[in-house]
Image 1: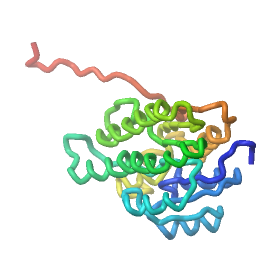
Image 2: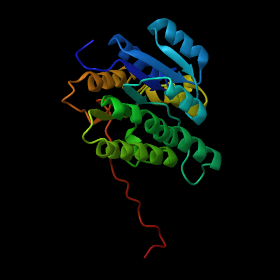
Image 3: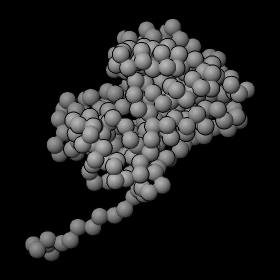
Image 4: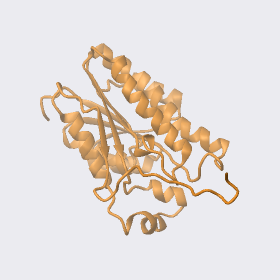
Length: 251
């Protein structure tokens, strides 16, 4: 472990994908990692592999999260848990909106609120928010509510730096582009089909790429705050412009 002062970390959405890789990577640095997710069986397997301390709790369980945080002294908070959906605002459901806001935004706000108080008291801490390029760019085919929630966490990351000014607490936002995770399988209900559609013919990021990005920010010297990292596959670009032709009836 380097001379950085962090001893403990709490990682949400830790049972698979990016979250599990972050647990592995931080454990390699000698940090005591608390892994939080709903899937108890997967968490137990991760614990056997890494020695992490597991908590089978949903980030939407406010009472459970509050009870947990009271028992921990957290130096590093990694807000990684998230959900997505297909479709856009024209065909989404009230239930989908509530689920995405609850997990992607409300849970991040609540957990950050709970954890940051202890960080301020100890004058030590690092908050890492895993967002998405969907929070910064509009593109056809993206889920509107997902984009909005990730944009909210981007704004939170920026505002936190203002709120915490004068304290030795760092805030990092890591914003990945396409990354090969189970999220795509859940979207269409079949991971094999998702691999064929989204990954087999493309060079995408892997979860360990994001975990290494997080480790770089966390293990950097205390004088240095890696505030924002946009991580894309070399063969993917963002942005672009769509321009619709006039219809026959247009003036």
